[in-house]
Length: 372
Image (cartoon, rainbow, N blue to C red; front, side, top):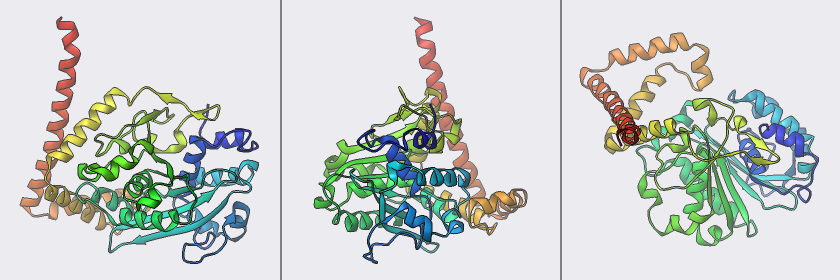
């Protein structure tokens, strides 16, 4: 049993005819999409031939590729391991896109992989370490559509027109959300070519997104895979089905797909999300939906205005001087007008009351068998 890197070491010398392309391969490509291959992989507009991993290695800028400090060590190890795999030596990559826009509060990335003899895989990048990327994630709590979702639809339609029938769409974290969103709202002729959509611990959607025929048309092809103590993947969760994979991490650290366990080339599956985590997720979602859209927007904007006072552009920036940045945040809270401070206290109080209510319901359910 091991993670996706251990999987590559074990099966990297096997061709796809010797060991079939599977979920572990899709997860690996979803993680690979986090790397910043600017200038090394052709973009859609360049209309250049696809490139192999060895060609990418010759032209890429390592400082750029691994500039995101999130899981940098693991990402480097994944890349080095992948370069030595016979399984992927002839895989090509194309249609790279990467954008971060402060004004629109968006962070987006995507790339398409062509494993030899297998279905093409469209992979959407998840949230990187940028503050603007995290702000966009929080915006999903009150915006029906965020810019990255719009970009994912444009990308999938542009690329999907060029792909044969039977391609896959995937992503981890926000990338999983984009994989589902773009597939649901893709043009009909593109959507008909999609054989599977993989969301690896991707957050859910506001209810109106999944209402209607558009979602039903692709619903049966969506595979949501979550770690057994998932928080991110259960945010805004409603009617979507999911499978659960075992993780070596604890709590929120399970969101890191390098902790997901693979055995004999397949995910180690669990029956369901841990019960205690289910209750916490229920409390969080109940609290989110108890707020009006304007209340959610105000809460998110205030939170990130506070973070903005630190001048940090990435989570790594914030962490490097966390003591001073924490003081700045506390000063910011004190500088707010009494009405806003009162509002924030009420929001946090409502969250705690919702959580307490859920846990009381749980305790009552646990007592019933004893009372009988």
